[in-house]
Length: 185
Image 1 (cartoon, helix red, strand yellow):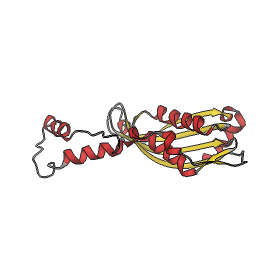
Image 2 (tube, rainbow, N blue to C red):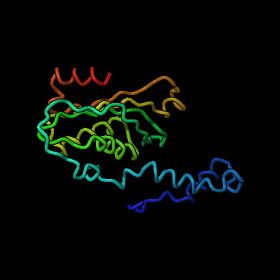
Image 3 (cartoon, rainbow, N blue to C red):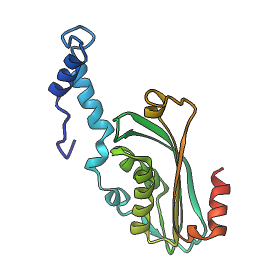
Image 4 (tube, rainbow, N blue to C red):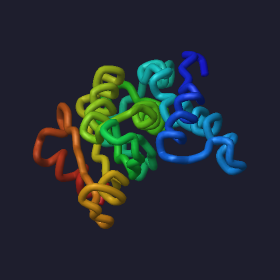
């Protein structure tokens, strides 16, 4: 990892002891290192600048209709319980003389998802970054996710999902918002 972050394996070993486990047991000997590497990967977004992710993939194009990338799968960790939440993001924008390579939209989602998050912030960060970087006429982001902290613990509601949205610029107009929602549904 370029930012040199690391979850120290000895913390995971200590947690295993606190749980009443034997970290020297065959199945757990390598667990502290595995968990350390897993959390480094699951939080790699801290070492990424989302604006740099877009980089020089901006192209001048006289196109002024809505561009949507639907069903961008993502996985994240809830900052309250450090349990996974996962789902799909739908990202749209209306360009103003500049379009972006479409894979960059998915990369921005990934950058923010690979941090400890709440879904509401994730949604807003994606929209704000695209608005600030692309300077489009508008941005729309809808995120649908399932949260294991609601499914496995606490309220234990296995069929629940959360939907959040961020609508900026022209997406705040009723017709544009309606078009966007119809196209992603």
